Image (cartoon, rainbow, N blue to C red; front, side, top):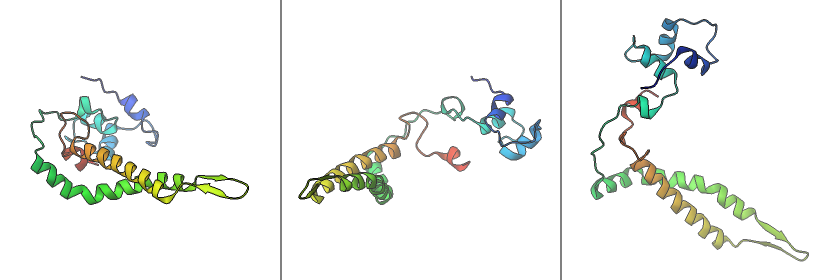
Length: 151
């Protein structure tokens, strides 16, 4: 179990002034749960270390083909949109490449740029799908539940 210290927690929050500050004031600002737990307050003040602070459980929820298809239905459009946005710098860079000769300028053909960008999008979609189905390759679960609720 890790050791928590107020001095370390306060060092991560230089915006908290004036000092010294009371534990009551810190509880009002960070709203730990349970409210009177010093450990919960220090976890909220950060850093949150998943291997120490997360609720851990045996992740026995398998992703079947049917569940994977549901994930695809839920997230496909968003994942593709994010991948297209993520591929834009590649398209912009490749489209801007030019070699100037005395008589003409040479640039990459549009179909070649399109092929490279399609490959980038495919890899981005695959990576995003991996993150969605198992964000940390761990036993912390997939829902985010309490962690996301508190953001």
